[in-house]
Image 1: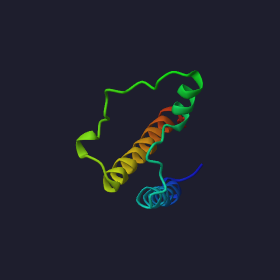
Image 2: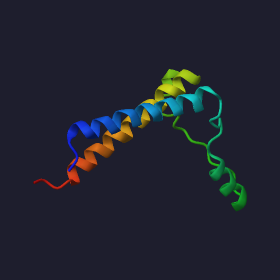
Image 3: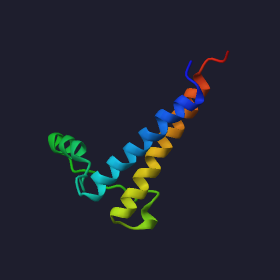
Image 4: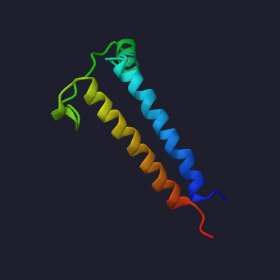
Length: 95
């Protein structure tokens, strides 16, 4: 069984690498400004107009820009890691 120190030595660098990659993608302009291409293609194929959403998002009050995108991306990644850790701890066998 892996010790807690071994897990930390693996998880922390992994999180740092993911944050750096996300930062490069977002700040470098490599991320799509219109990420719903699949939905657009689906509605185009069905010959139906794409519905408008009334919900701007929970981070809409921050405005727009690369730093907001970076901030919300990092928060999203960290939330996924925390939820994964909670799920792992909840389902792990106890000795």
